[in-house]
Length: 69
Image (cartoon, rainbow, N blue to C red):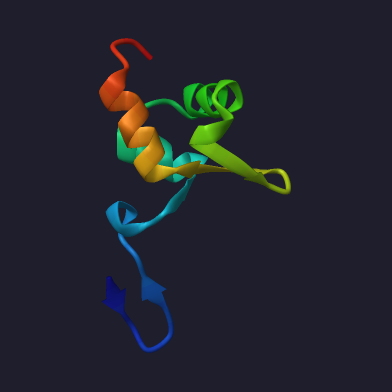
């Protein structure tokens, strides 16, 4: 975590929830595929209004246990 007088920056590896864009960058998977996987497996994320958020650790575990995405 990097602290600045005006803002605090948290690295993706420390975040509990990731936006779809952050998850795509972190996992190297396209945004459409991330959205599809979260919609098919609701335990992998949640919806905050119209925004889809990804549970980083659950998604990591899902990828570890999956042979094909």
